[in-house]
Image (cartoon, rainbow, N blue to C red):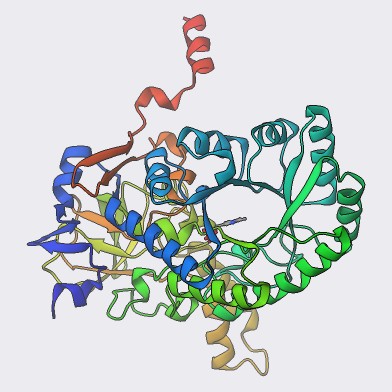
Length: 492
Ligand SMILES: Cc1ncc(COP(=O)(O)O)c(C=O)c1O
């Protein structure tokens, strides 16, 4: 069996003898030079994704624009590459707005989402005259009108509407229904439109926005959101007596996570169907843009806000095995990175594929329980909560008539989201490097210092093969802030 088949690697990952390489750079040498844990990004993959998504959107609709969802990765080096590729940016807070400007985006290239925008954030956005503030409630629209009146400005806004469409790989990342906390529901819309009409001098309702979820696997969900937009935009336009200039169809486009590929070593009984995206983001986006051109015509601009599909497959996280144990028949591996670096592995039980980056010549032929370094039982790369819940569910269901093995299997698949074990080479041991793949989205943004853990360093192999430091590892002194330091000095 070839290495590629054993490990189902994407093309920019290769084996250099026993070692894993990214864009031709030996990752064990990278870890020796920069330490671990270490995020390594591929500049080529990032620029390639940006080009591919923009080309796909434009192939489907001549006036399509892409606003990269910067919450997925707002590192300034990453943002600058995205800007140079001709993309615009979506921000979700005053902080992200500040970073967008620092990365060189112009106001007309910025849209601002968010469910709880403060007066100060609105003053900043209205003062700059950004492309659009996506309004999340009738209350927020009246707050925007107040701020705009006070500043003597016109605020350009789009109404974020709840479409009632349930896309998204897990419940926590489905954002298109009234069960989620996002957007303006139908009952509130009339109130919002009345506010828009009565403040027409300071509110320019330029567009409509929706976002149905993240890692949305089914194209029909996106197509339904286009039909919804066509109906809703017409209603809004009639109400306001003018057509909308842009329609923002949000993000949520899926990536083809490595473990979905044939031959991936996912552990023995992991149900891949939950993540089985058949259509890559660019193809889906082109189909959606085409549908938008048909349903909405070529005149209004069509905005997309991809995040995950731009950056997820651009990076891996290199971690070192620091300890091992045997519990019963199963060996356990203790990595130097856990959910302090990959919050989604605990928060939404997200699966990150693992490869032993220092034993690429060995087959992944043994099952390991893999855990992180934190003093927290939930810091596991298996679903400890789901396994507990499943055990107690099984106990409560025992002896109840009509509980079939099929029902039990379905309940187990819904309850336990991650595989019990990971398949790695049998010789995997302390000192080895384990790479967690597809970790470029949301990870740098969500790192934190729990248990006195320093946030990881991140580097990028740039398109010219130079190594760019995206961010340094925290220093020990970064674990205390300036006020703590002053307090300590005063106490001495
Ligand atoms: C309004 C909005 N747009 C875009 C995105 C990006 O989603 P994804 O990373 O799934 O493309 C999000 C993610 O939460 C969002 O809330």
